[in-house]
Length: 427
Ligand SMILES: Cc1cc2nc3c(=O)[nH]c(=O)nc-3n(C[C@H](O)[C@H](O)[C@H](O)COP(=O)(O)OP(=O)(O)OC[C@H]3O[C@@H](n4cnc5c(N)ncnc54)[C@H](O)[C@@H]3O)c2cc1C
Image (cartoon, rainbow, N blue to C red):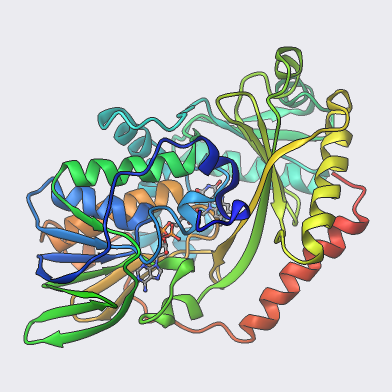
């Protein structure tokens, strides 16, 4: 995308084409203008357009340019935070509401894919969160017990069963989550755009918003070549925010994450390595993840940016790490490599902001945004349509709080990941 093979890598090579869109030119009116063409913005657009609301989406670059087109494609349920901790942090009401909403969020993704016949390699066979050592297993035991008390279909698997399912003895156990699965992320977001357009939404690309002004009770949102006047503005720019709502970005620390895609593995290897094709990630602080695409390529990722010295360091590490996990894989060749920036909040929880009257948005998904972005987009649509009030939302309204020493911390993550991968012999 944008002539950069390291921005969207394999997903761009294999996704169906994006729907045809144009740059906004001239002025128009709408009920709602949405800024940002990722899962949040396009799910909101789809659910609003389905209600007959006049909605315009303005995307600065291309559909799925942000996290939505670059991620691993693990459709997860819940957040990083332990289920039992959420009510403590957010209060019982919001804690339970968020857990319920996000626990069921993958279901909404899979339903939308079916309903709109989105071709996105959907594979709802569950995920395996794999334990590194005793402490990793203890974390997963607690997670399993807390989700099970809430009736979630999660199972703690022992080391032997994990080894059988993953094809390596590297883990002390794993948490199988049958709510979850994998998708082709760029194909999914392009499919959401297609569905929104079919429902009546107008989607403009290469149309970065550069300013917004209140005119009476309405907002006029401006791009270089045009303007949209609307009653509501949904800000869905999240970790890839470029002005004018810079405070959304200032609240997030960018954590870089890369992926390498192997050539399709042989049928024999596919029978040994994750034969059930679950999405896999581990409990390590600098975590690794892997999953198959439809052709049997293994997409293998971890923390780091593929730029400068990082490009070679992380690639060498990925080769070593794969071989260490699965010796039979040998010296792998990669067909694609790419990376993106995950937006991390200070407490690993997402945010709902009212940036001004009738200017609202969710952000800060901490690397778990496929299902949350989809479900938060729907919630935004219901709120704007007057079906639910601000008090009924899954998160309280908060003001964005800029994170201190953000550039330093972002540099630390990037350099720290290189150092760790340079010396790392552990998996
Ligand atoms: C490498 C990586 C791996 C990840 N892995 C996973 C995973 O496996 N599972 C999971 O659930 N989540 C994962 N995530 C997180 C997930 O991808 C994001 O949380 C999610 O895509 C956020 O969606 P969004 O629609 O809110 O924002 P985005 O998809 O980032 O979209 C925001 C859009 O706003 C546009 N924009 C910004 N400023 C303007 C402006 N001024 N005018 C117009 N448009 C503008 C941007 O161009 C961008 O397209 C990962 C993220 C990354 C980067």
